[in-house]
Image (cartoon, rainbow, N blue to C red; front, side, top):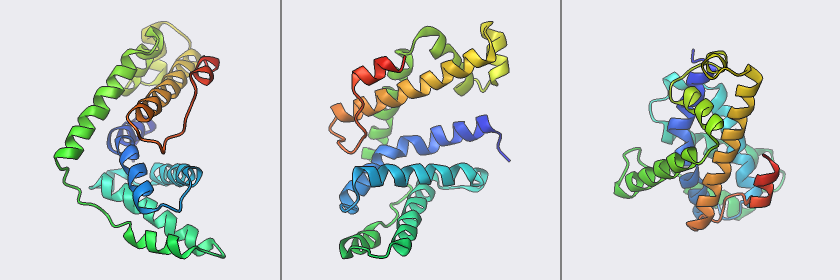
Length: 193
């Protein structure tokens, strides 16, 4: 069984980079979904992934898409009235090949570069705590000892890092034209500091 750190690393490595692609796929093939519907759907998909036996997942991309497709089917079964358009869209949500093509490889490289730039823009202490946790796999207690700070402070630095990275990635998506992302103003980001 994976511990929390390993689980976070697996999701960050195998699933998080797929989210923009999946959002684009949903916009193209499930046009009747609103942005809020897509956000809810992805949140539930992440919740399901969190409880899954991730060590048994051999094709993370196909697993993530299948999870989302199953959630759409479950929502359709629970709904009293399902628009015909949504039923047709669900059939179109077939799983793409796991083999990355040139476009997907280039997109993944760009996504990684954006993430690394965003990590480098974090405040020094925040970045250090994040790197120790995500890249070196240290526990919060070990990070606190290495940095000479309280565990609660480490927790705050990690939360701030994740929040800022999420905002940075969304801002980058908005700048590149991925309009399905949640918009967060720079004022909201400053107030969260």
